[in-house]
Image 1: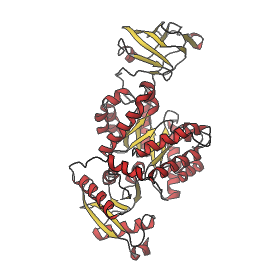
Image 2: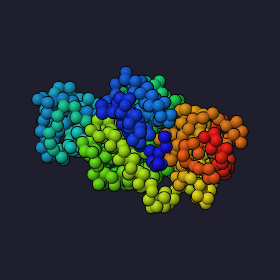
Image 3: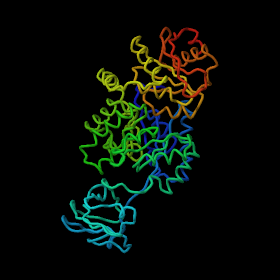
Length: 478
């Protein structure tokens, strides 16, 4: 099964889509990666979901990536007398360590690390920003705030702290257990929530030890201030616009999205744009015009993947949502403006052999109008570097590693195939042509580009580019 687009689609599984039949239909509709949200998926059901996806993978004989999204810390206020209280503008309201039920004047904040980190002038947002408090004074075990945006506050509503760096790890004990379970189940990507600093990512990578790649969810202002450091250590990033839009002014989020996408492209690391992309399709079979434009903008910017959350997890039209997103991406990629934007935004190659070869292959495909690049890769790095160039051609990644083939399902423009490693240069060229023909990306008489490393099977040794012709002999064995 081949896709007629380069941009990948990430679909979240949930009550509307977590059975084998729906997973298969979502894959056929265009999903390339399935997200398992550990905030809602019980750990004991994780392996079962992974096995369902692997069964679909075997049925369609195409690598599918699985992303396990860790919940991260959940910061919440305590409970109230009568379950809620009404705050009015300008009043004082105290957050404290007292465990007694809250009133209209105070509430327990069961996070001493927050109380010790707040400073006068800091903003405290409650219930996804519906209430806004400004810290006036802080003393041991409590913080007095002034209510700037008032309203009803009720039991255990979420707390966001856009101005405060909290001395708490991105992983909770639940996350550590979920991470081990996800790695044991064989997921391909781990998404890390609540990233504030590069050390948060390093902790997960230390546990993963290469068993899965790590994607940093950029959802906090503190992560944006250290964006370069976090991106450098991450294997991929996600623009988590929902939480960013709570903790930062909404009008800043589009610019931050573009900044993150361009930084990821410069580094050659996958970037996913997420949250509310086709939100109306939770209850409607068609999206709004604004949502279509939003998805198209992410595609025009060169994002590796666009993500569906509740649309595919709990919505009424999960298959339609995936199919709609696929059609939008296909249409954008047929626009000549798309390719001029891709060329304009391309970063200069780094001073490495891999980047020099990737840039050369891109130039050759443009000069000779070649539509297929076959990359022999063991770790996937060759395909990552070629995809960084955003060539107007399909990248077929040929790899002996099933893990690599699956991970590359997230990467822009890459069609991965698991096959035994090449035995010599002639075998490398012959099988690259055969697979390009068999998968429908080339025809007899076409030329393809082959990129590989010598000696074979050596990770990170990309040092060769070759032009080959597809002929009748390849067709006989395709």
